[in-house]
Image (cartoon, rainbow, N blue to C red):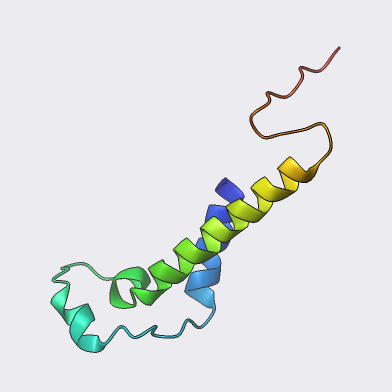
Amino acid sequence: MVGAYVFGVFATIVLPVPRLGITPEVVAGQGFTSSGAWIEEPQRVIAFGVLYFTILGLFESLVRARPGMSSSEPAAPEQV
């Protein structure tokens, strides 16, 4: 989950993200007093959410697809 979060943050900061219909009036109407990429361009937050939850969903699907393993089962402890 941490890897998906960090990847999503960097991807949405570095890559171009379309406005997704969010106008400058909407951004000005937020009333935030701070600044930053996610505050000045809220479409980046939406893109992050889509990317983050897509990665988690795909990972969860891959884990459940493995034979004999589900994400709800605890991992067996290693024998030393």
